[in-house]
Length: 204
Image 1 (cartoon, one colour):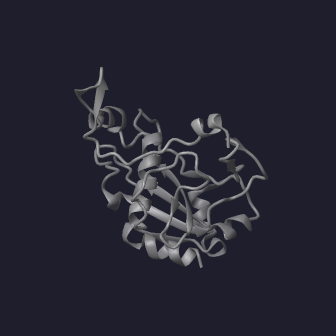
Image 2: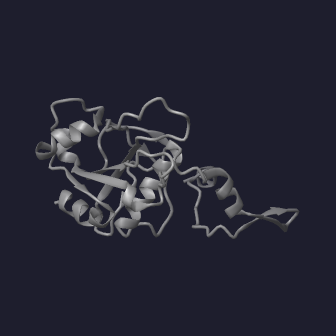
């Protein structure tokens, strides 16, 4: 590996606690990373932030939230037993004004894996995860919606192998289809406390 390749390798990310300060002329400023987090991600209902939160919630349920999220990884969470988990989230409510509830639908397309050494996506599209967790923020009252309330979440857990055998769309799946095809998909609906066991069963 050349020096240029070494210089352009992946950035080593250390987990931060929010108390880190911005720097100017080698001196700490009275602005913390926590302030940036509060400014940028306080809207937990926003679909982008909600997706990240769903991944974190699932990782916590699986005792797998010790490190840092790798945005470009082919799946979202790895359990302590090595099970690879893909997390997809959806919600009836959005941050903006709505005329109706959002349709609950999840993307389940195969993706092209990233070749980290070459820094490009190569190979045949595939499902990299062993298990899918479909996380639904189920609250339908905007005055009550709170993504930090774990009682407002529903989780639908299915093995990847059963999703791949599905005769209908391989690009997306609706919540209604998950429920109607429950037996064929070997899908389980659980709450936060049941997630870990459900993922373990789906990985068998």
